[in-house]
Length: 346
Ligand SMILES: [Zn+2]
Image 1 (cartoon, rainbow, N blue to C red):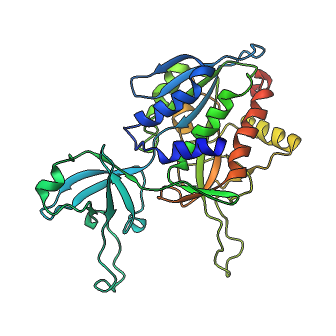
Image 2: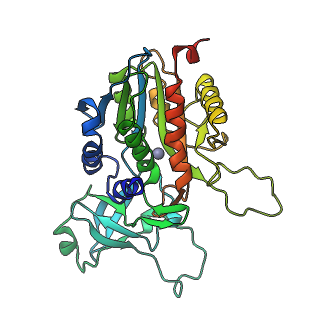
Image 3: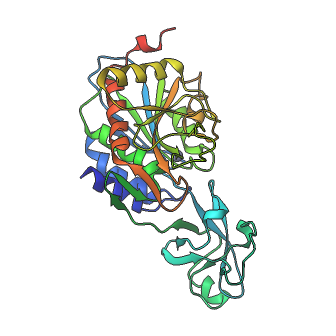
């Protein structure tokens, strides 16, 4: 059942700026468990899960609904589409990739010169790539599409033993964990949830969501990069960002924020006490999350990120460990059950 939730959320399409389908799916799963449902002017889905009232803290939990993708920038005379990225994409992984184009999800493939004609090691430049939807003229390509239409990776959800493979675990896996937490037993406090828009283009939805919620403390449920495959044997001690299967990753610091050390200590203490696997996301790597926007709103918000390690992040086929994902909601739930104002005392 819960794996089916992941499948449903990850196969659905919601490139930044067009998160409506994802929002509808999430709403279907949380509607019966929350109050005060609002879709804010940016498009983020906000709601409150009532708690037992023992703890007086305004706690915000966020996960972003959007995924990286592309957008049409023009039409060539041969019927191919020019495009640019929406969110962070590496042009080197794009040639040969299957995509779904525009609101009708037209199947396309990102073109490249075959190896027979392209033996040199030319760098891949995004502005030289095109999308081939099988159209034979500019007019026929334009008949069902417009500039600005969004393009998503085409990717089906596959279970591979202890791991799963699909696009968009970043951050539908975080959304799915948050849904599970919402559907479970109440917490000692009211939980203010935000399923945010436009994280991948600059943490935009989370910024206004946090301004509305004005939380005392925030937890961001994310997915993050993993690079743990065999490395250079000459450098065996090379640091990896995270490892698959080693548990959810607690972010200490990234390019957008420094996690509140009191919250990091709280998470580690709870994880150790309850035997929940966990790891730290190596801090020297780039990247940011909704917490980068949330922690700077209002008078400042102590914030922390708990993330699912995913290989091949921001690509069409991510690989994630099911146990890491299950332990993400387990760790956050355990931490919330013991979250009190004392955790935040100086
Ligand atoms: Zn993300």
